[in-house]
Length: 229
Image 1 (cartoon, helix red, strand yellow):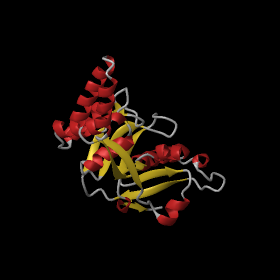
Image 2: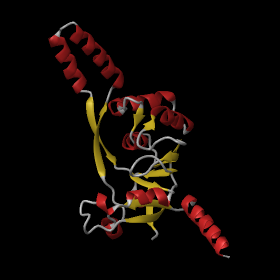
Image 3: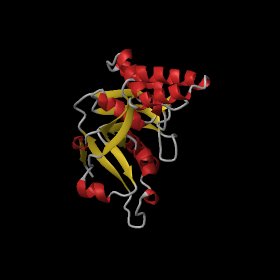
């Protein structure tokens, strides 16, 4: 009977871990969330307003520098600077379908006021009526998502190569040398393309590094989030 109870407990744990009706948010300090719920926060980022012209200017700047033409170089630099614009976006809110992953983020030592903080895993239901960008990223790290995977996912979600390349070019300065982008940059592009939610499926993630596989759900509108515990 004891062995049967252990097996049932393990089965129950597996079901809870993979139940996509609920999502989990690990936090080092839950006091603000419990009091006010998840709140909309804004971020500001720069982007290249005309990528084609910008990269042409970059090419000509390189030529001017190699020729020692400082006047032309700084004139081109000034033109390139005028293409650098700013926009405001909704800061992403992160959830996982794995309590194990969420638990790695629920460390009170990460909190600003760690002595009074209350760490917890917050269980929620998310209204997923809307436009969801699904990104199969099996075995990849959430710390840096490969651009090729993002391109493929956008194509499969109805975004053309032309539009995909345009938006990636707008944020070319945020693409890492290993051809990956952060979830923050991905979230900005997704919002510009009118997606409401991103699901990154089978990705490796934890607070200390990408070593636990789960689905990460990124939400932009806190009104979609309902706390259930």
